[in-house]
Image (cartoon, rainbow, N blue to C red; front, side, top):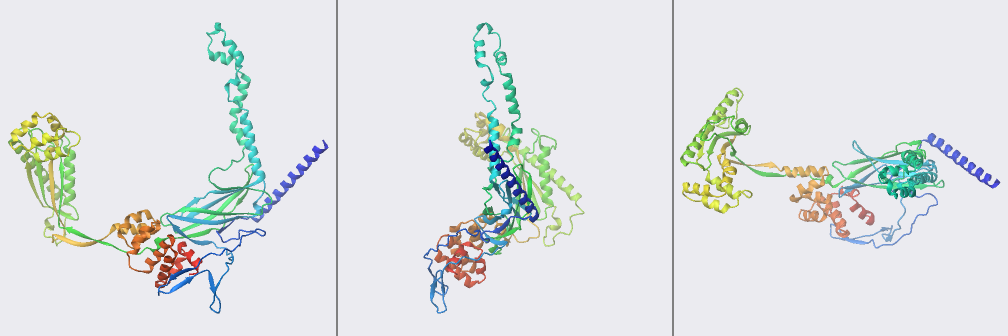
Length: 627
């Protein structure tokens, strides 16, 4: 008994000490108001005192022989030259750490890699707390949340797991096997007695059920959610978390290297990053709001910045004369030729033709020279009668359009003035000739429709043979006797009664029949715009066929190195061309060719040595060989 009291007293003292320690730490935390320290990757000392760093030096064959622009053989190696001119190997020294808040990062293959180091001071760490850090990317006016980082105290995690354990024990008390809620033996004995066959099975089951146990089981089920909230104060992280680390009191701060890939988007030039968060206890009480860190900035470099402003032109032939035609299914009563606006679907067809006529009459680019109206009939009945009907119908539709065009002239008489004096037709541009024509029976179109058909007719060859008979009367009789004649009547003949309108136009202000001119190549310009906006998929499609420096830039941006190499090898020597060849050969592992092209490019344009630090393909060679 005495021993038990000692143990309990010791535990109480430990709990009190732990509580006092956490309270003191929380007061200090609120007083000092610290934040997480966010640095660019590699710019902060990630090793504390006492930690061992591997500084073993391993020799490597980093000597390379290349040919400089003057044709001289040059040796590059990890070495220095002393005052006497002697080449001596140099030891690789540990660099001094310089904290920076911005960095140029390259975009490659449509992706940008953002790396940063997070340092969490030990004042924020406690066994009973959880730190929740939220990195945020700021891109223009948009924000993107990255995966969170959780630093969980050892006691916090124990309480969390114990909560889950309590809840599981609660769930295990719930009976899921319904047979355990019935006096099964008694019920089966009762049911074995045949004299009770008239009582339903449900009533027997209800009579022998354990009502008290059922009530209690339902109570447990009803309170599942309540008990979950009571026992499980927090949930174990399963998604949206980059790190969930458990720490104990002896931990002296936390340091974590965070790397995030970001898909490039249009006009992505700058990304800012901040980290903020909170500290909570197991009961989810907010103990401390971690203020936002000082932002760090990434400036995104891409090959789109090397785009050349090139304008390409196409030769365009402009014709003075133009032609436009359309057809309409204007309907007539059988044997009649009068144009009836309200008959059949005529109101729609006539309004469509009138709308086109008005549009062309007042077009800003073209004038109408003449309109030909051709009416035709289907090959039914008497040929002479069909010929007369087609002629009269063509004439009536022509008159209908003449009346309508005259009404448009009257309505716009005071508007159409001061036309282009260069065109002899301009002063009379809305006056044109309307000519009626006709086709008695449109056999040519019927043959064409039969040939094109793939769904309706089965005996096309026989029908085409009949249509080629010279005697029209015999041709008609043979068609009438054919088993598919009804299909012709229903599906083909109505289409033969079309009216075709041919509009003959000329370009305003143009005297010559043709003019050759140059116009800007809009396809190339759209590709150039896409490349500048870093829409590389579009740029490759639009610029690829041109085979110039911008085409190569589009290919390189998507890592299509073989395609870019083919383009660049055909281009004349230039600083930019050689610089891009340096990039490609570096990607292909040919360091010798890469350095040779870099030296040539730098000699022609010394400013490229500043650009080289932005491109890791060249930067690694500069660092390796001291270029």
